View 1: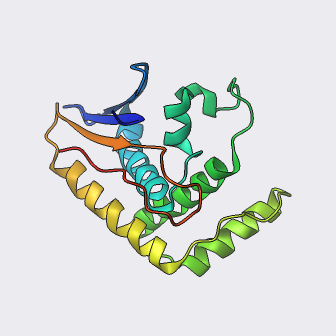
View 2: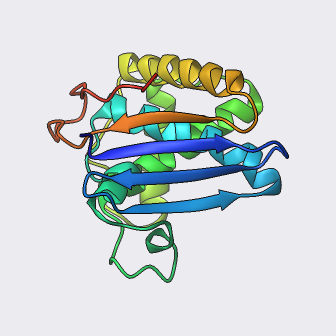
Length: 181
């Protein structure tokens, strides 16, 4: 059984629901209504692409697999500070979301420079992760494949993905996460 089964349901009204079921059978879920229902499925699929290609164990889906709920990531979260991998992933995913809105593609050097500047602005040590052009290309390719699968899902149906934390923690290791179906 995978560490996490991710299920994104496309509702007939354009909203969505994200449900994550852990290997122990526990689950966390979230309604994504209105404009959030159009934004978050693509954002969540971008998380999957980034975390899978980079082999991140302690970013969003890895932490959910570990037992974090969606509210644990906010300001009032009870799990403690967000790990560096999760902070890094969220920044990178935000840049990929911006790419999607602007219709442009960034290079690894551009993404690394933006990330380093953000860490400096937040008075944090430089990130321990640096992207390569190959990784950026693989993220963009996987993200495109996932977006196409999402677009093909009829209202009332769901896209399911498996996520495993068994990847090496070294960035760049390609884990065995596989889309279901």
